[in-house]
Length: 372
Image (tube, rainbow, N blue to C red; front, side, top):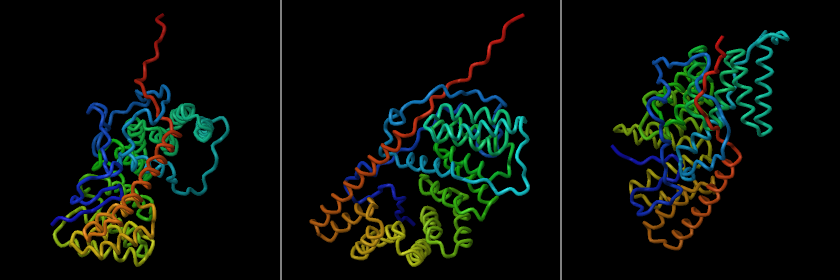
């Protein structure tokens, strides 16, 4: 069985002769094998004193080549979502006594968080590192690793999160954060495993399912643990259009014989639950197009753009469908709209990246000691 799925990143039907620049996606390049973090089930060497240091910051856009990188855009989105993950509520916990290392660590962490808000990420990461050295708490590991990840120190963030998971194996958010860092390094299967485990620890957490879904959508191949968790999402949230959409996409990617009907049923249920679920309309349109039901595809793509006028891919696919029925004036109109939206979105992405500096990471040098 073979049918197309789209992840909302500008993909177009194979029958279209030319693909817009915004539709092309390149995976994040992985570093040399020696620097790749350990995969789940393996121990990673991690001393109490990490062997890296943040030496400075550079312009994020100076890295180059990211304007059309859909995987990288997903990674950036996940990094922001990871920073927003909340720790489980704790009851009966008193503040650390003044003068204790823990209290001092709290002070450094709060100062680091303020430095980030004030636009000084270099000071922020130094404060958060110091906080973790003073008090290797779950919260401090999470804050330090998240700061590294936000500023694209991907492998260093993975190192910190892996150490945190080793110290706090029941921390769902540390597992999720480690998965997000692994995803940023294009280790999709390992990333999914960590986030799936996080979901098992906190099955009621909707945000974890959203992250699982995004990882699955961006992965070039189906991920083994994802489908079961997204099915659970639909069971936990029977009135969630998003849950049905994400589960449908995981099923579609699996390509199993006979799954098309279930996929279509889930997508139809999604738009029934939420008439503004533009991505589900888009996928239903793709299914209709593949069956050469071009009027149905046009109707569904039109509903997608009515639900979200800035859904560039829907405009592009609508142009393709109009081309099949010979309405060339509408083809030109939809292509023009697509190009305008794609250009505006690319400019917005670049503007956002310019506001986030990238860390320059160096090898930590040992401190020299005077000989007696």
